[in-house]
Length: 445
Image 1 (cartoon, rainbow, N blue to C red):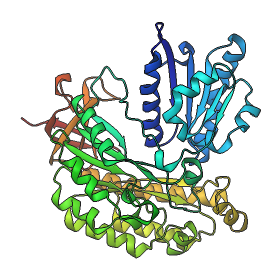
Image 2: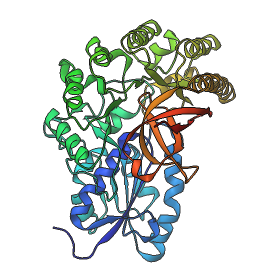
Image 3: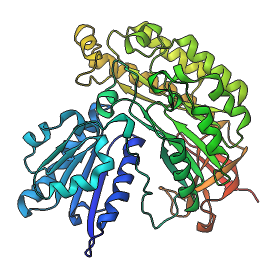
């Protein structure tokens, strides 16, 4: 039952789209107890910091962000402070030792029970780092409360991961893979569609393996068909994909589902077979390139983005050159590249102890790869000048209040003059200028 006096909750989200989604679900559930969201943590009665441990930098940001909040708690007795997410799952009681003013610590599996946990934390400090039973995992159905139309929307289709890439902390932070029932996914998509969402992204740690836990057959292509059949779904995307699990049925979806967006994020991590083996990625460079070739055969205009980890333990100069060569061959529209960051408890830390790549060498390699990517990206953007694209109008431009931003089916960001009434509409835009990370255009009548 909701409280008669509204209380304010502030959630700070670090990390991936899964964390963004989880934060929204926490807001949706807490609304039942009278909590309203605020953008100012100093006004909040409850502050939740939703953490990410995939890389070291977001983890360090958490400590920095908590500092002034906990000082206010010590000075005034409020707000209630909770730490959630992957770092909370991994560090658990360590948060209480380091930060005595924290009231509540819970991992990703605590999200469905956030109301119960917050209530308990009013009486005592609460630690919840237990994984829920797989058979009864309660995916949250509540939609995020919003007074504004959200043109784009995230819908989770699974939690956890059954892969064990040697550098990755996700399986220990989010548990084993659990696929969400198809009927629940369809219900959430329809609920968002009623509110005006038109561009949907299905999210999970390895979406291609949807339904395949415990040795079953992937039902991902079946799920794509079901969501695509909803008329209000104008564009359908998904992330993240594992190259090993890009099966023929999923690739063929681009040939028969016209509203499946012409974009795929397909992390490669390295262009070297030797490094891929040490990473435990379970595919080869040749397999990855075969998948790319088949995708471009069925949808020639598809744009690809990817991830690279640079300086993985034992990576030689030749290994790195193979990553550069793959980057040039595939010509990704964009890539997200990072220096290897050893995560506690992962198998790669043992490799790091034996075969580290120096920080200076890793930084130099990362700079070179990013420079190559920037050149490819600029060339790709320049090739768009003069062409017309169908663009879904999303939101005001962050850089010019007189312009709006939208995306093409291939996920290129385009800024152009538009009226607020055009939000959520599909318009034809002629590209007039190519910038390093976006395009400039004008609406064509």
